[in-house]
Figure 1 (tube, one colour):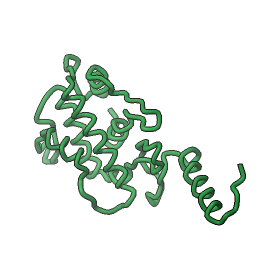
Figure 2 (tube, one colour):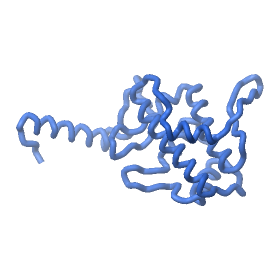
Figure 3 (spheres, one colour):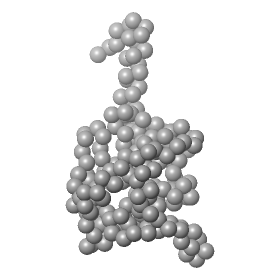
Figure 4 (spheres, helix red, strand yellow):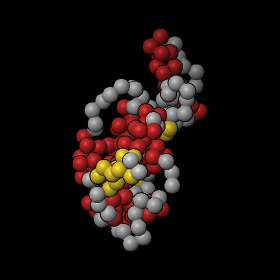
Length: 181
């Protein structure tokens, strides 16, 4: 199973903003996604309300990861707060080590495991490295592996280039100089 940062990144990336493609477009797809990651059992089935909660959790996480670019504290995005309140977890002490476990089973438990990964990512130091691409048309989640945690785009070659090209053209236009095509 992937680590907490990878799980959170992969969950946010189930919706591709740029192409408007959703891996979790139905309750059945949500069930499969959770089961393939070992978050639910074979017999667990999602329903429409589970899908709505998953979408709220995902988009709330996307907003939180976008705020990770600033590096400072911030308020929890509303969608994330609502989703977290609906996903009860309990504190456990296993071998004297505190942890969070779902207080529910099934799909709700699988989504609660994703919510619990937020705490684990904070504890292991990977949370601040989880970001969403600053390119507004992209918003792909990524793990910032740069030494100083300053990466802004999922890909410098694609999204970074787009952003820099737009900024260059805007500067040229402001100066009254035509941009080369």
